[in-house]
Amino acid sequence: MKSNYDVCAVASQFEIAGEYLHAEPYGSGHINDTYCVVYSQGGTPIRYLFQRINHHVFKQPAALMENIQRVTRHLAAKVAAQTDASRRVLTLIPTHNGGACFRAPDGNYWRAYIFIEQARGYDTVENPQQALAAARAFGHFQKLLADLPKPRLHDTIPDFHHTPKRFAALEQAIAVDAVNRAALAKPEIQFALRHKMLCGVLLAANLPERVTHNDTKFNNVLLDDASGEGICVIDLDTVMPGLALYDFGDMVRTTTSPVNEDERDLAKVTLQFPMFEALARGYLSTAAEFLTLPERRYLAFAGQLITFEIGIRFLTDFLTGDSYFKVYREGHNLDRCRTQFKLVESIMQQEAAMNKLIETI
Ligand code: ADP
Ligand code: GN1
Ligand code: MG
Image (cartoon, rainbow, N blue to C red):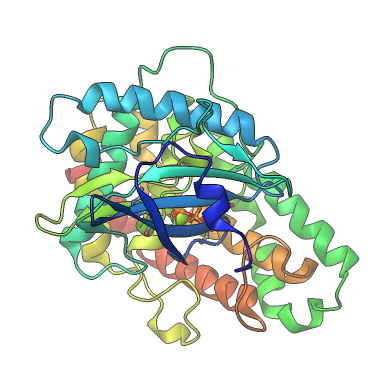
């Protein structure tokens, strides 16, 4: 992460009382730059969460912030009567002139949130209780947003989960081979081409459009330290119209394997059935009341598809020179692609059992 942003100057633009103490890079996201900023308020250190929005990825930051404002206000109204309401939804801190974000002189866009204390996000799942808690929270999130008043939210990244278009981008990257890496990824390219037929399945199923999160990575829900509950869904940049199954699919992708997304030992990458079962039970505990039968039928398949899709995206980024996802070592995106494709195979092997289980819930 570029570290020479003047975070203190950025922070001075927001409605925060007290004295600025310091800021540190925070979290392990692939897209935005996140900082934990500490203020002293009456001698007590208080943390805030600042983010520089990656405007190469999110090309219309103002529209994105409008989405986030609408979504967080809607959620805040719904949870207002619950205990701990302020920890159950992200709260934006306005700039001095009431804006949702600050555009710095260097062209960067920044926003600030209240820091959710006594909760954390995890890169890998430790036990089925955590999988259940995360899935419950994401299902609840979809449920609370089902009656978001019109207009339709902005598409912050058009065609984000349009898998056939993602595949077309991969084919283009293979053909151009801009940084001469195709030879390094022959088995992965072969795997992708062999499974092209997966891409269009959900789009052909005529499923209802909903307000969905679209990036339901396991570390995008904070689990309460004391109770383990999925207390707050975060990373709202991609909340927009989508399919419920994109969210369930990404939960399967990130919450069933015992290792990190960039694990090099592929023998460790596998769908752990108890994690899938916990996910399905957790998600259906909050989502069953609004899901249609066709949506339920594709739950297991969605895991396969979204894992394949993200694998394609990592492979495309590897072939085009690592311009999208943050990388920290040579071949990082290829390593990530390999884990995805290994997980796709594992899901395929267990698909029948996964479908059978869903029928019993
Ligand atoms: P990215 O889009 O880069 O993944 P996230 O919005 O997920 O960025 O934030 C990065 C990390 O910062 C998260 O994984 C989480 O650990 C932490 N985080 C984000 N928002 C908050 C918050 N309001 N309170 C506490 N921690 C947060
Ligand atoms: C990115 O922002 P983060 O790290 O939560 C990406 C997701 C991918 C994920 C893969 C806006 O998510 O789509 O699934 O990396 N977000 C965007 O780890 O592209
Ligand atoms: Mg994130």
